[in-house]
Image 1 (cartoon, helix red, strand yellow):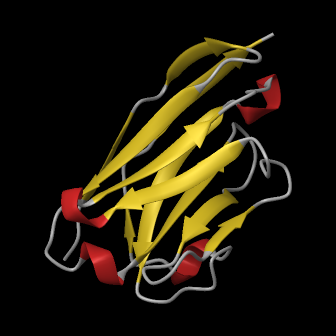
Image 2: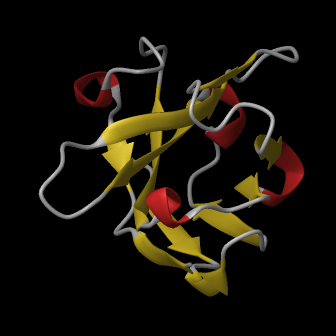
Length: 123
């Protein structure tokens, strides 16, 4: 069992930055793929970024590539999402998720989810 708790959301002006954190319980954090998803009102949950447990494999949605960076600190059982050059269209509830070996962009293939943290970008 893995429990995930996100933090770091908030209100920021367009062009600003935020760093989201996802703290995980459990001893096997390092063996999970960690993903970030987001969901805006009235829209489906969409993939943002993911990090495989092994090696430097990271994946990004085209809409955030070059602006967002996913990282993880396995010693701290924590994943991060650094978000730069934020745009109003980035406004959403952001969720972190963990899975054994999901297709990174498929929410249903992740096993554990956090409660979400709100990110609001004003224009």
